Image (tube, rainbow over all chains, first blue to last red):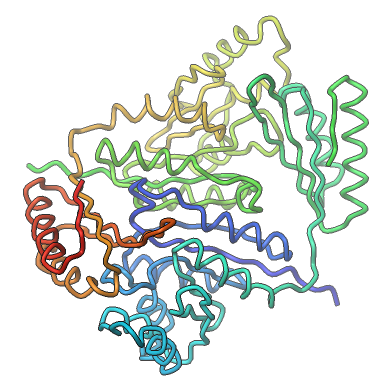
Length: 248
Length: 248
C-alpha cells in the first residue's frame, strides 16, 4: 500500500508579531525542515496570546492535519498561556510534570527556582517531554500537538531533533529554472505545461535584482522522473525563444 | 460616542512560503503600518495557492474583521488565482475591468499585452482599483477585502498609500522597558502589574545578545496616562532590585 504523505499546520503565538514589533521567522525554519523530510505544511496561522483563540485554532488544526506545531507562549511570564490552552483544548488537566520540575531544579540549583520558573513545568497530563538542550525548560507533545518555545535559537534545536522521527523517506523532488523573460511572456506556455503534468506543482516567482529581472519557475512533485521530464520541456522551450534558461 | 477601533486580518497566499523557499515579510510590513495608524491586526494566515482554501479564509475573515488584506496571487500566471477566488467568495462575476485594461495597454504599448498579462485586468465586478505606481497592474478592493500583490516592493507602496484612509486617529501608546534580569525573576511581579492595569497589554520578551541577555517589557494601551503610570511603576521596581532598567 502506498504510504500517505503526512500533513501539518503551524500555530505561531504572540502579540509582538501582530503589532509588527517582531519579524516572525520560526515558521520559515519549520517549513524548510518539514519540506526536507517530506511532511507537507498546509497552513500557518499567527494569533495573539489569547486563550480562546489558541484553543479554537488547536481544535481546528488537530482534526485537519497529521501534526500540529506551536511556537511561543511557554515561558515563565503571565502572557505565556500556550500549555494551559493545549490542556483546555484537549479537556485535560494542567499538572506539574515531575520530570520537567526535576530538570528545572537541577538547572536552577545555584539560582532561584521561582514560582514563575516553575510555571514552565506545568503541562497537560500525559504529555511527553521534548528535550531542550539550550535552556533546559522542555517543550512537550500530546496526541498530535507539538509545543515549542518562541525563542528562535532554542526552538530550532528542539524542532530539528524532534521531527527527525517523522521522516518516512517520502521526499519531494524539485527543479528550479530561471529565465530573463517575464511572467507575462511565458505565462501561457507554463499553464499548458501545468495542465499536461497535472500531478506536479509548478510555481512562478518573479525576481527583481539590481540590474536584472526575470522569473524563477519551481517544478515540484512526488516523482523524480516526472519532475525531470517537465523541467526539460520547459528548459527547451525557454531556450528556443532566447530566454537564457538556467536549471538547478 | 466612543470610536470603535477597527480590526483586520491578513491572508498571505503562496506555496513558496509553505515549502520554506520564501521568508514571508509582507505581513510584518502590513502589521507595522496598521499599528502605526491604530488598526488592530488580529490574525495572519498563510495558505497555499488553492482556490477552495482561499475562499474559505476570505469568507471567514470578512465576517470577523473590519478589513481583510490579501497579498499574493494576482500576477499573470496559472498559479495566480486570488482574484478569481475573491469573486467566488462573494458570489460575483470575474470580469475584465476596462480601466485596468486601459492602464495595462498603455504600459505595454511598446511590448506585447499577452493573454497572460491581460489576466491581471480581470477582477470581481464592482471592484475599486488600488493604484500600482511601480508596475502598473492594479490591485483592487471590494466590500471589506483589499487585494495586494505579493512582490514586496510593489505591495509596500500600494499598501502604505491605501491604508492612509483607514487612519481614524485612534493611536496606540507604547513604552518599552529593558532589564538585565530574567523573566523567571520578574515574572511574578509583572503578572501583578498586569492584573492591576488590566486594560493594558503587557508583553514580556527575552532577548539574547552576544554578551548579554535580559528581557524587554512592552506596555501597550489606548491611554497615554495609563501606559505611563504602569511603566513608571515597573521601572521603579526593577531599579529597586538592581535590574538596570532602561525605558524608551
